[in-house]
Image (cartoon, helix red, strand yellow):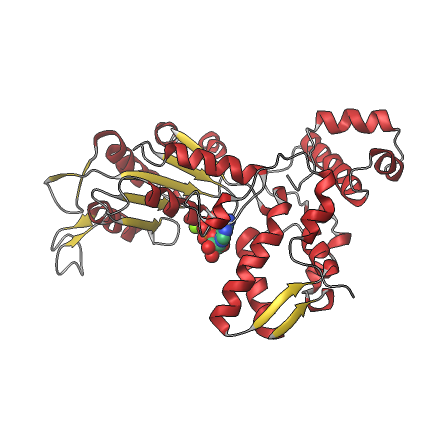
Length: 353
Ligand SMILES: Nc1ncnc2c1ncn2[C@@H]1O[C@H](COP(=O)(O)OP(=O)(O)OP(=O)(O)O)[C@@H](O)[C@H]1O
Ligand SMILES: [Mg+2]
């Protein structure tokens, strides 16, 4: 089997990409994103936006599936802001029990509740002058949402059990994997807080929407893992990379990172070949999107499900035929004109841009 330099899959597919000659300044650190790898069009747009908004105090709402890098980007925004030498405090609102979260956020005075034997500063006070990341804000109770709204509007709050109003100067970044506008419609998230957070929305694309980032990310994680674990795995075969490029990566970059680390540790040296990949990746070429469709208790919109299904089959046929539309149309038993119309309607593009 032939070895492939990690970026070969990009080179091989270059003819299918309509992306410009955009280089990857974040790889060599020119734009200050040394740890955030990405050269796809979507990531370049994201970097440009981060550069524009980092040094203002506007609230940022980071949205994206799990493992897309929301935490990483929040930290980068802080580091590029003029608050960089002040604290960056992150709190996962979904991981802390509701009754403790208020005290974690706002602190408490001594005796505020059973067990509060001394006073404690909350994250907002600890972040004074800097940035706070309210991670998984979509999981916060509506009582706390009111209190966070007050901090956003007036920059002030009271500690649990306290009566003194505390003022802070904190830049707020909120992150969630949920669709907050949908949560507002369902009545799970306050509309006023949503609009207060929705000043600068930043959407992190899923990994399957930026497949061209897989080779550089793999390379980066492989290097990291070799160094950390004293290993010498240096290549991924073309077959293996092609399987990695067809897998939907539901856990996004985190899933890729963990898989690469596992492969590097187990392999020890040499190359990663197709047979080294876990079964879900080896079978990914047969990935069946309809298998993931389940009717939840909330029901399902048949029309949009059918549309999504059509879209994914068209995409699959295009990827299989390297976007040669005549061939893709044949696979779908359609004529070319109908396929072209559907590509336009669904706004489909080659994914390695
Ligand atoms: N573009 C990237 N370049 C390098 N590493 C990345 C990138 N995106 C994510 N990672 C790494 O992947 C892992 C997951 O990223 P992160 O925790 O920021 O995701 P997240 O969107 O906050 O996920 P969750 O919603 O589960 O909290 C981290 O180890 C992070 O360093
Ligand atoms: Mg996170």
